Image 1 (cartoon, rainbow, N blue to C red):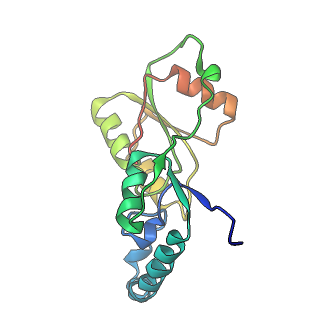
Image 2 (image 1 turned 90 degrees about the vertical axis):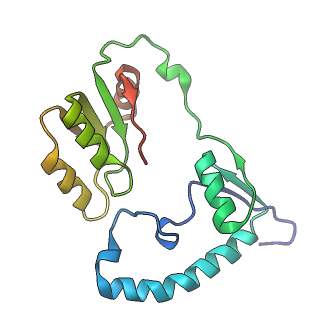
Length: 174
């Protein structure tokens, strides 16, 4: 970058695979990949840390991410939550008989827990999102889900607004 360029990073999270957090593909289960990753990831973390030091200002999307930026990059950040168009949501709800999860269907998002609780407590759960990676997590939770759990896949923005507005609560378990 040019000397007078100011670099601002809006960070959703430091790379999950480098810092021991679950990812959409459980590559650690393959011993050959794990051994390779132990060696390569060390150098990737060094590179990632050095790149983070060139950033002038970090903006985190949550307090949790701000804590990760502090932990892994030793940098302060300002928290600015992602925007929400509240006018779209300002209308009287109709249904309110289900709980909602909106997420990519991957490991580390808490979907397994949400489905198990919905099964045990017998409440309706709607899951918006598509499987990512190889779909391993989706196949796993689809097998245990009972009839009270509905997988909606991708929905349009207008459908999503209605789902948010009419849900009893949003479950954010990641």
